[in-house]
Length: 76
Image (cartoon, helix red, strand yellow):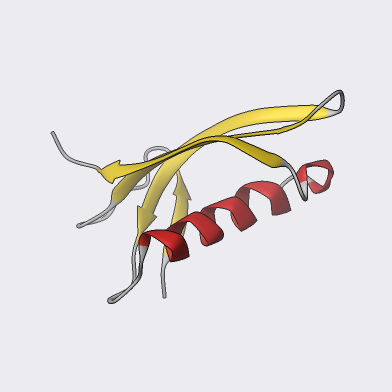
């Protein structure tokens, strides 16, 4: 199972993500964190899980438009 974590809770092989969403005139947010993919997970799987996690945490964001999404290896 994949896991989405707030910033700072990373595991081995984790990916760092940033997501900005907006509902014009209502609400917008930018969130970031880490994502630990399950074996065989795709970038689309990650996007869908992260979007669901972010919008589920604030019901007014459900159906919000994505302004920005980034998913990168969480290592320097």
